[in-house]
Image (tube, rainbow, N blue to C red; front, side, top):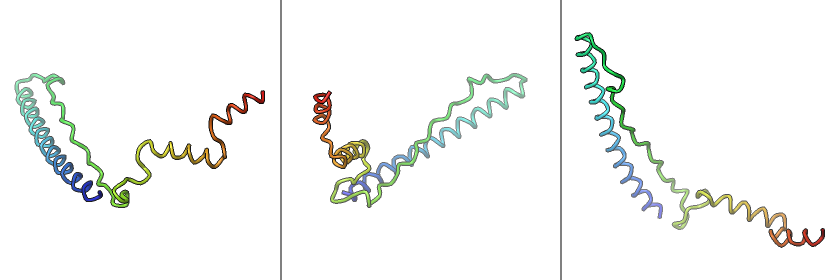
Amino acid sequence: DSREALALWKVADEQRKGEAAEARVKNKKATEDFNKKKAAATKKGTKLKNSDKPTPIPIPKAILRPKLKDFSNGFLQAGAPGDNEDDREAFEAVESGSKGSEDDKDDEDEE
C-alpha cells in the first residue's frame, strides 16, 4: 500500500538524516583536531604526514520518496527492475507472430 511505503520511507529518511548529521559533526571535529595539530607542528617547525590527515566518514545519500502514482491497488506498476525487459520480449514475440523455439525448429527442417 502506498501509505505503508510512505511510512517506511519516513522512518528510513529520519534515520538517514540522523546518521548524516552525526557524520557531519564527527568529520568537522576530526578536521578541527587535525588543524590544531598542524598549527602546533608548524610552530615547532615540523610537518605532519599526510597519513595523519583524517579520512571523512561518508554521508548517507538521500532516499527517494515513493510517488503515489507508482502504486495501483497495492502493486507497483511498470518500472520495477527487470520487469520491463521480459514484458518487451513477450510483446515483440506476440507482435511478430513468432512463437519462439517452434519457428526455429521449422527453419531447421526446411534446410
